[in-house]
Length: 268
Image (tube, rainbow, N blue to C red):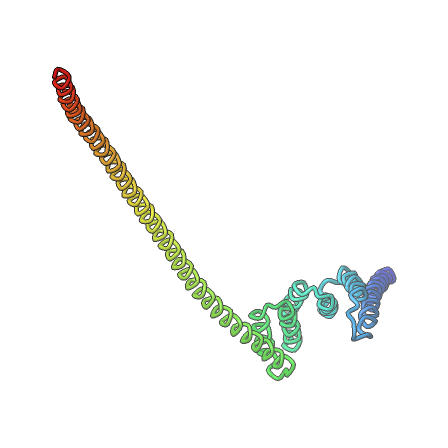
């Protein structure tokens, strides 16, 4: 009976050891890919980091609660610029551990992920929390100051942009005023132009009426002159006729006198 119990214990230990070896095999392979990707600092070998991620996940499937392998996975995610995933993973590690140094490291890396993702407020909060757990961490202090400086630059730029925006708004407002002023000026100009045109048209109309009146007067004068001339002509003709009658009467008298004289002379 004791031998059977011992055999079961040995089999359990062997199975556990074999499983642990399999898990570590995945971790060792992941570390190999990770180290391979880190050899060339001039480029980002996302392919090798992705292979490392896959191996670390295999190990965690076998043993999900291993914080070191979780940390390796979070690092592999960060190197691939999967900053949201890496930040979440580092936060989980920080929440699960009671070791202040480990918590500080996880929060530091969480701050880095937030910083790379341009989430400045979140990164500053993570760095501050990391320093509460490890106040002497100079790297975290430096990163905190860097993030705060970026935040200040961002705020200054925002103020500058807002100022330029307000300035452009005022400029556009002035421009609109000038535009309205020009439009009103053009409108007044058009109105004045219309008034000038109406005035000119009225002047032309008045001039036409005046010319028409002058022409009518001239025609009346011509008609009157023509009428007067006709009367004069008739008077002259009448006078001529009268003169001719008188002349004829005188001629008849003279002829009669001559005739009478001849007859007297002849009778004698």
